[in-house]
Image (cartoon, rainbow, N blue to C red; front, side):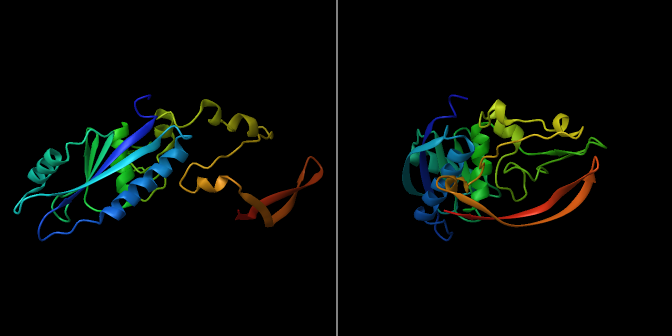
Length: 230
């Protein structure tokens, strides 16, 4: 994990082709910085962004996806930890990753995280039906490595990356199954975690009811409303 969990150098290569569009360099660099803000939070600051270089390259008219990638690679001559190639619209059938590079069809944040996940060593987020054993490709909706909307990698992937600590993995069943309780501490794991510094959380409302437990009236809370501010 030492090769991954460190500061990364990134090069953004904007690939242009006459008659097709490519997102602006400003928007591409902004997405890279947004992704590394997320990485810094999810990884406990183990992964961060050291530098971002940028270059625009033009590929020849009539290029197909394979030849355009080859031309772009030759012109970029990148030795960064991660090279982001933004391909001309409609030229390649899908976004994909290879070695230390990702090739993007657009500028969606989830695509950056999905393809860079492969660079970090993650496989696709498939889902298995426990009753039938059937596997659905890309079917895990809890991770960027699936095909559905998500806001993080799943827990096994975070653990494999070394982005969770053993003491953060808490089994609650044994503590509560027999009427006991357990206190757990939650930490931000997504892109909103920068709010954790100087963050104020104030309970402002709740719904509850009373039940009898061992002859005593106990208040059970069904929801709590909190106000979050800096």
